[in-house]
Length: 303
Image (cartoon, rainbow, N blue to C red; front, side):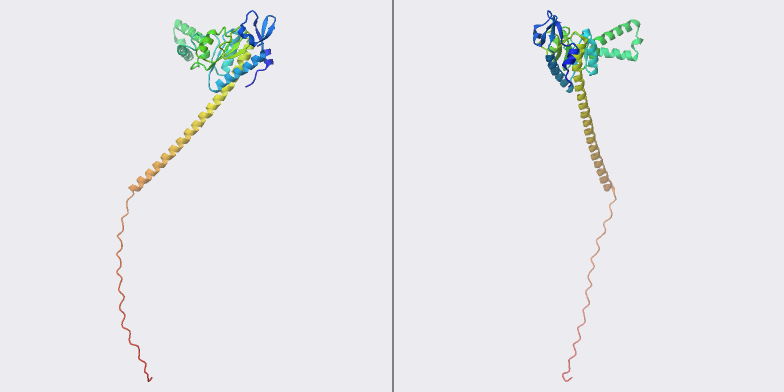
């Protein structure tokens, strides 16, 4: 995570607060001093609190969570859209529709209507309608794009919300707090920071200031999202390899069983050779009796 330097914050004019007569005393702890009737925000505190907010936003994205970017005032509108789209997150930069979070199911029906109208437009079906119906459908499409175009791919309420100007986005903040969705807020000296989980003191009336803070959050969200996608891809690849290994083992086992079965069937079908009768035992022929031996010649004693 790249820390935002004091010089960068100074160049963007983040330190300029509101006039001293238009301030909220609860922001006193974030104010460095006063110059020319304008409060000067303590950028050392802004830098530290922004780093905390970045760490949180990056963690949410690293887990695969969704960060909703909200900024409907003209100073924030373009930056919110560009940065949210660059990090693949939903955004609201035109008008907050009441119930976007607390009545998300109903809003989902309007989002579905937006998808349907965009599909009809892409397929050329709107052009085939009668003039009055075509104009009504086109007007509805443009209105839905303006109000819901940034959240048309949001499948559920977000895991966190980044908001610029708590006064302008009061309804959005109330809905997020009601659902206990953590809020990262860019808070100027005229706002009440109570109830904001991650306060980032800063000038919310300057385009450069709004872009600087929004980009700081968007960069870490993009980084965390990239890490999540890489880990998810590696996990899916490992699962695919394990699945292929198991399928190969199962296939080899099945083939071996089929081969053994075929061999057994072949052996059973082979003709049986006749068994030879045992050979009769030969009766031993008795040896002929020998003739009695002739008596030995008797020696003549007179010899």
